[in-house]
Length: 255
Image 1: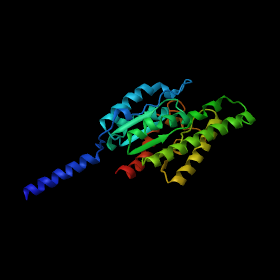
Image 2: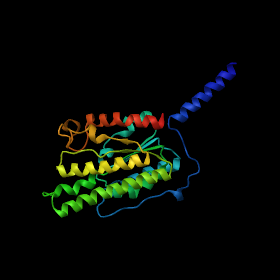
Image 3: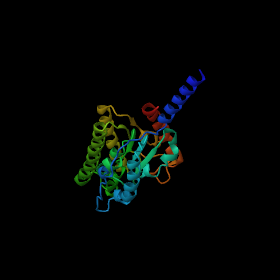
Image 4: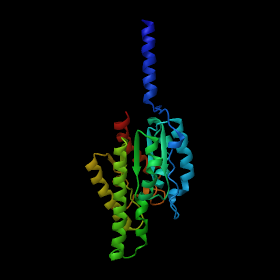
């Protein structure tokens, strides 16, 4: 009887360890490891390319399966996700300050797919709206063309990310682009980006976490300054709100 109980306890402990993010893949070969290379033209994505190649190779060759992988721009980059979400197991952050949707898509296979994470949390598109703040007159044909280009670019790359995760059986959580205190035309474009993203997520049955609306100020347009350090990047309060919104979706997929 005692022997049976010991065996059962051992089995339970093994299951517990497996559920805590200790999954591994055997037999990975260095020749199959992918480096995406540099984008060039001063792309912000290049600023962390060497660092991420080294980190990715270490994870890849160790056969480690990340439980949650965060990818995005500076709002992801500055979030200490490894500490904040440690209850979910192995956390990897692949945020790059200044990154844009098309460049993140270019590095998506190397920084996400080949690492085979259980869940990916993605937020991207804010920096695609940055050129719009230079326009004083938003009624011109030139501005309308620039806005359409930015919104369409983000939509196309959101669609690529969703399709890529589906094709590789990776669970995905998409997040809305957050508001800013900067010129109103940026927030207008961000709203259009988020409307497109909502439609894509509904069409593909992908969970969408709405950071945007939770961080809005009383005017319903710009960010609430109580939640940000500079009008764009969240402070502790802003990140706490984001965590509270994201956690239920992570629980559904991982617990």
